[in-house]
Image: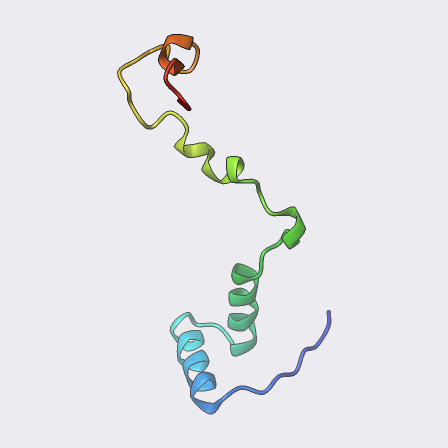
Length: 80
């Protein structure tokens, strides 16, 4: 495990101490937990695509037309 040293404003340290105490953790354990939750585990180049991020939205809208995506008649004036 690597040790990391950094300087923080006194007010931030006080807030960290209060939050750690409220959760019954040491300052070190609390900061580690916050960093684990905040720092993405996948590199920025491996971000999910827009499709992957919005997959849960597929099919939530209702047009009332069952064949909207497959019937060419519905696209007759599209792009005109």
